[in-house]
Amino acid sequence: MIEIDVERLRSMGLTPALAAEAASLPETSTPGARLMRLTEVHRETVELHDGDRSHAARVLPRLMRTLDDDETGLAVGDWVIAVLDAHGQRWVHARVPPLTHIARRDADGRRHPVVSNVDTALLVMGLDDDFNPRRLERYLILVQGSGVQPVVVLTKADAVAPQALADARDRLRGRLPAQVELLAVNGRSAAAAQALQPWLSAGQTVVLMGSSGAGKSTLTNTLAGADLQDTGAVREHDSRGKHTTTSRSLHRLPGGACVIDTPGLRTLRPDTDEARLALGFEDIATLALQCRFRDCRHEDEPGCAVRAGVGADRVRNYHKLLREVRRDTLTVFERHQQLSEWKARGRSARERMKLKRGED
Image (cartoon, rainbow, N blue to C red; front, side):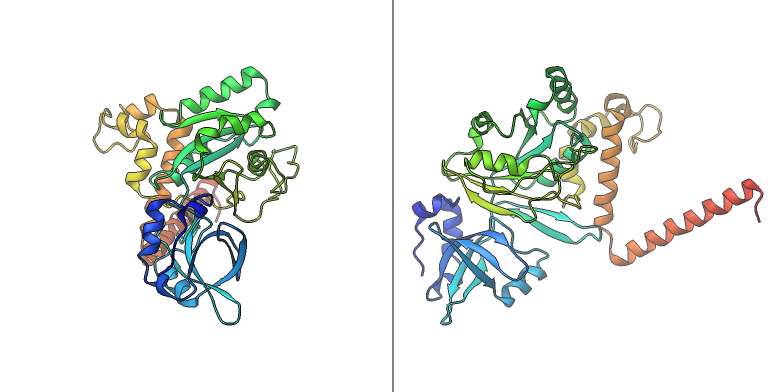
């Protein structure tokens, strides 16, 4: 049985609950087994940290198959049991069940892990052309129900006029749940680190999420007081970055917290269900009880309390997310059937247009 130095690993985010989970795994009885935190995932290897230094490792094929069968995989922030073999190669034998986990789905509905064992998700959005409330709502739903606390961080506050900042706050406050904190910072200023201190106490782990060019890597460097991550200029016409951060990575901060920087997600599709989606749109769920019709879809029905009380853009975003969630519950056969129906409708619409124009 391995001995777990909780105090030494606390600077990597280890909690007593995670230590207890790790100690209960049968792999801890393997000679030379050590508890480490996963800080980077590469194509063939992973980077682990033992509280003192980093180590490269490979993942046992058996563990990869088990995780794949469970529709998951290793993620930055995971705690793992690693063993050094006789040839000096380090192998990951087991993953400690994470206390929190964030995952997304791709266009085909397959689940992909994002991060594990984080306490707070700093949802970063720039006050330039990166400002997009609909995308921010997607990030909130991505985090919703994972056990992770979301905090919205508006960056580049130094680049906008006070009235523009006030207007942006007002726009978001009408769409964010009341319990979600909203901050505006200059990501290059030490004041930003001070503003985020409530979520950066020793042993805490935060993840920075947002689009490319939002200022995540700049904020990571500010929190660390060092240039840990490369930063780059954004395009003037749309304020989008050039993906200077290409993979997720975990870093220790001077105060004892850990921060995970992430690249912008090219496919931002939350791994959620209808119940969790409703939690993220509580205003719509509440007003729906006041609609004239019990089965109101909040589209064009008369007496719809949702359309009367919620902005049209937010309602459209809700409908789009709901369609995606429902599609993820379909079987492969049902998806093919739905696609065939859509194609048939498209052909029918084109035929009607031809008849209307008098074409053969």
